[in-house]
Length: 99
Length: 189
Figure (tube, rainbow over the protein chains, first blue to last red):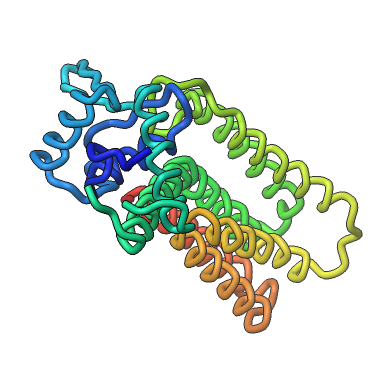
């Protein structure tokens, strides 16, 4: 099995790593994710959209005290894809395969 | 897509870095309100004891009771959810951890015969100082800094100040103040 080309981009990789660290069912606010990853709104939004289109993350928008809120979470498919990609990276380092 | 071993190693490093930053943020988000609260408690307890020594035996038990109740009320009000995550189930572990520590300190207080008031008081400062250092080694460097500062302040006060000649006021203001400012510093992350 090869690398996941959608996940293997620096910011998308870190997005997936962050969301996968949350307990199952937990969501992370876009603003918090932006702060953790030190990304800009546009850059983060574009990469989240790519991951959402791939079915790896889910984006939920609502309002809290009349203020818009965007929350992101990893999907079951996204968790599996991320784990497969991490396994691939580890196998590569261990010498089991070539990229 | 070609990935070299070096690319893979770098990617895994980025993954661990991202995971570590989230864990750090979650730890700080849980910890900061209680640091501020108990920093204030420390100020009230120690400065109050120095100002009103006749009430000394009652001030800390009363302060502890009030601030413990406040901590529990805050925990329930916030439903113990990290502001970094919403929608999941409630996490009972922070409350259980705090309760365990409190129980340990209560047992310690009653189980050990008081010998020297300043020494006995300093044990608490050193205990929390080292506890923050240990927790910080796993969860975030800011806790290491805070723990080291508390330890240093406690040791300085223990060796340099007499019990009824500024020790308590120093510990209350400096130690309690360090917790309050430390909590606000953690909140910024």
